[in-house]
Image (tube, rainbow, N blue to C red):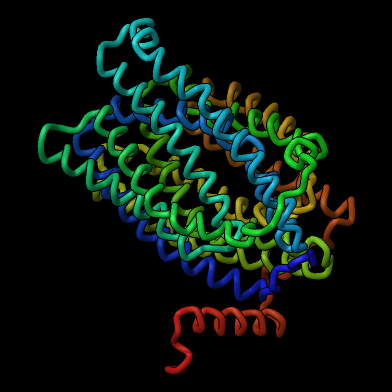
Length: 463
């Protein structure tokens, strides 16, 4: 049968509409998250909050290993196949990946659920630890299902459905937390029960749209040859060690703080990093990972995205950082005074936001071009440097040393990726002086963004 090529859409239009939908819901999600944190901090001591951060770190490490394995690779290849009209390959790839992901997630899920009593006894805790481990096991499987469904929605650019998912999940979690807070009491077990309820509600919400996202595959016979494992062997094999290396320094960081300092320091770091993460989430980077792979055949468009995307992301990050340097300390002092020790740490970590904005466009380009081997090599250097700096600065300078190490490592990553892109001719050199100018092309780009923004808000008739 003739190949059905996906109808081309404007990159800027899809970007603006997607970011507007996802961004507005992200604000609502953050508001719900603030209320979640308020309820938790009202009843948790500094030590309990630190313990909660350690549990989340453990769960995140498991999730990144068993949930996210090859996720970025598969998402990129699905987008490439859809953009080229190769739906038969996309269908086969998704089927193979779904079986792989659910089977892989079942391993830690089953261990946590059935071995919970033995693990709790070994740890020396009572029935609450047993219950928390079983809840985490069920939550682990639900999260695997959510990630599969969102893969389908991202493939079809269903940002209007994706956008409210995390917010609805967080609101459901907040509702259950509130019930426990005002009734029988709020503890670690109740917090994880609330997360379980939110995940179950999110699945029910996005399942109908995810089923509709498979419509282009109806009547299309999947290719007979395997697609998933050849992609893994070709370029995806580098994603697993890269993910594991990132976990060593990222997700294990709270445990290093606990070893060298104390559990209370984990809580202080958790508050500072929570505000930093919220600031990063304000950057409009949610749709580029889906849109950029569709332009891999157009080097001019790819270079244009890198040049102007970097410029505008950094501009936005610098503005947000200046505002946050004033606003965040005030918020902490007014609402969470017991965590005022996190204010200096937050200010020291703040340069990571513009560095993060500089790195993200490079990441989108590298992933879209399947440069996972380079990303893995860079992760080796990044991990070695991060561990060396943490082991040197944490004992010597405490929590301040941690902040210095984080900023230095992020700056090194930015330099390594930029040098690789320029040396290989993947994109042109970035004109750093352009950060200080607003030329005619910038003004034209801004007009285009504004036009699409107004159109997305359906305000054209008023302008």
